[in-house]
Amino acid sequence: MRNDFESNYLAHHGILGQKWGVRRYQNPDGSLTEAGRKRYGVAEGGSVNDISSAQGQKRRIKDLKKAVKLNEKKRSKEYTKIVNNPENFLGLNKRHAKKISEYSDNIKKGQAEIDDLLKKASKVETEEKGISKYNSTNEMFADLKRQRESQPPKTNQEKLKDVEQRIKDSNWKEYKDGTWGWKGDPNASEGTKDHDFDAFMNILDERRELKEKIKKK
Image (cartoon, rainbow, N blue to C red; front, side, top):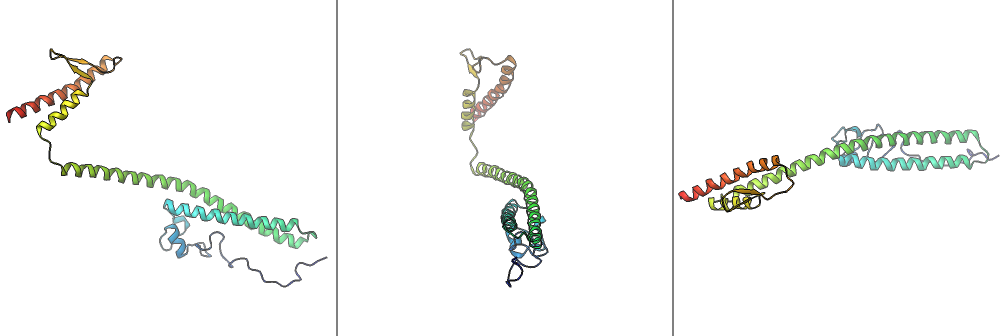
């Protein structure tokens, strides 16, 4: 029977004591390296639990998925070694089984963190979009205010012209005898007509006041 431990060889299985996952961005104790803090947007001394931005969380998820895939690949290789071991050497199979267990644990931990981050990332992204939309809306109103302030005030003639257009666009038409009739939706209720006419009367009052101001000048 062949002894698999007789040959002398040099093997490298990563850095001793290093945590599983993204080696470039984490120290052996699980804290983030300088590159990791920069990648995830975390302050000095922070950890993966301190990733608060949507972009940082997306990057962490991407890195974790790579790590999970790598562990799955390694686990598959260990399964293959057991299946292809014709002597079924107990000690060798135990060694492979131990590695399979370690890789499986890594995959489970990685997937759990991914699931947790996906929930957080969705919430953070929604909040960031809301803030961005809020800021954009505020800026829009600020621009409109600046535009209004930069424009000269309208004259009474210009205001009267706007009011006449509003009357023209309303649901009411004026008859030759000076009365007003409904020209809106023929199926509208009397209550709707009454409410609309009250608002329309305010426009007529505004027109009358503007005409008086223009006449006085």
